[in-house]
Image (cartoon, rainbow, N blue to C red; front, side, top):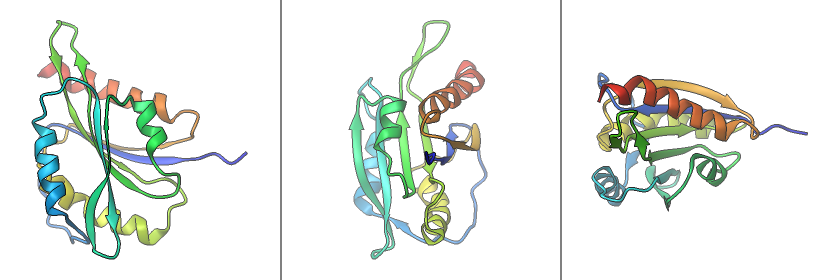
Amino acid sequence: MLLRKWQWLVWCSSEIASSESLVVCDVAEDLVEKLRKFRFRKETNNAAIIMKIDKDKQLVVLDEEHEGISPDELKDELPERQPRFIVYSYKYQHEDGRVSYPLCFIFSSPVGCKPEQQMMYAGSKNKLVQTAELTKVQLAFEITLSPFTAGCCFVSCLSQWQEGFCESL
């Protein structure tokens, strides 16, 4: 049985220096506005914006939007052989009773993607992070997952981030 493996790069809020790197793709104007609204949304459920690169237009564009989506459901929405960018907002209950809604940027790059795709996404990542004003990073790491562990590992990564960062909010 062939295992479906994932490499996710996850960013969650704190300071990061901006990068003067090569920009492969710009971000579609309608997506910029959607991301701005998403950052300031009032809803209290988990939500995600999934983005892809339109190779012909050389633009990062909206792929899908989800409301009330768990990390496991989000994992199931991602294609097996194509990279995606995700902005994920979820409810976090602090030990002292406070509630916050952290915003995470996730770069999903499944093992087995075409190198050309991986390069386009990797070269566009910083521009998207800056454009979406997700310029604060607490934790950045790559994880390689099998389909059997992807959901729980993603949840574990969110938990590690929450313990390290949310408690200081």
